Image (cartoon, rainbow, N blue to C red):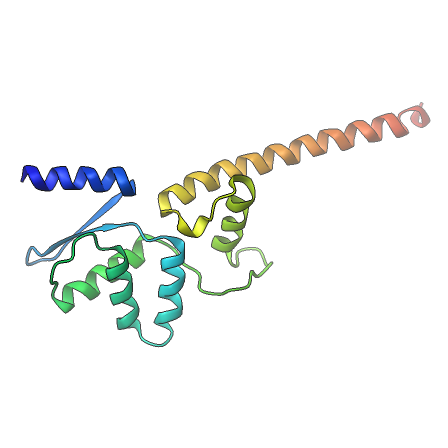
Length: 159
């Protein structure tokens, strides 16, 4: 048991978050959270073959190369999918409420110069939160600057 907990600590150090999935018959596997690029590939694959896509997701995230029952593999793959919200399209739809992951990824890339598709989901959402704050702060500064210019430009004519 000690060895298992040491291994889990090593995985957590490397991957930040580890997902443990256990079946009803006590089959256990540990997973790293999928990156956005893995999820994007999963979304493309599931259009043609959901089972192959779930197998891909399982194999891309599982941390031990053990033999797993097919039923467990598919069930664990579904659990990983439920962990995150994904979007499969390549282009970004400008409508509100559409392609929010891709829009968020662009914001993270802009502010932090990192590829958001290489980040774990937790790290991505942490950086997204910071990027949204930065964007709001910049917008407030711009509003203040425009208000000052308007007051200086038109302030004398209002008297």
